[in-house]
Image 1 (cartoon, protein in one colour):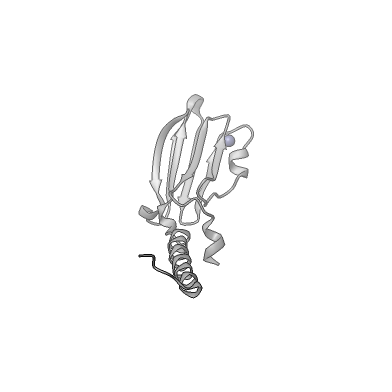
Image 2 (cartoon, helix red, strand yellow):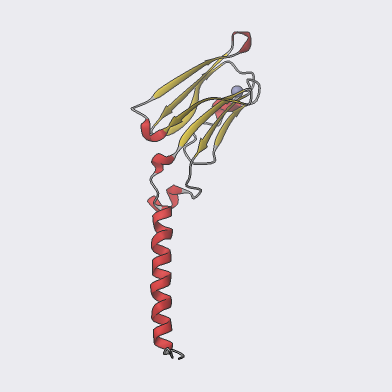
Length: 129
Ligand SMILES: [Zn+2]
C-alpha cells in the first residue's frame, strides 16, 4: 500500500533533515583548534611534530643545519614562527606567525619547512568570531 504524504509532511521531514545536517556541519566547523599539529621537516624528511593541544606555554625548537647554520622555530598558542635563523633571504622570518591548518613557512636556502597539519580544513577564525 502506498503511503500518501501531504506536502506539509514532506516539508517537515525536509526541515528536520536540513537541521540535522547543519548540526553536524556546525559541529565540524566548530571543531576544536587543538587538532592542529606543527610538522617540521628538514631536507624533505620529517624532523619533529608538535601537537598544539599538548603544548604547555611555548616551545623553542633549535635545529642545527649544515655549515654551522641553524634555525630556531618558536611554537606557542598563537602558532609557529621562525624566531632566529642564519638564512640569506630571511623569507622564513618575514612569513611571520602561521596558525591555520594548511599554512606553512618555507626556508628554501636551509631546506626547512614548517607546516600546520589538521583534520579541520575550514578556516576556524571565520566561525569563532
Ligand atoms: Zn630562511
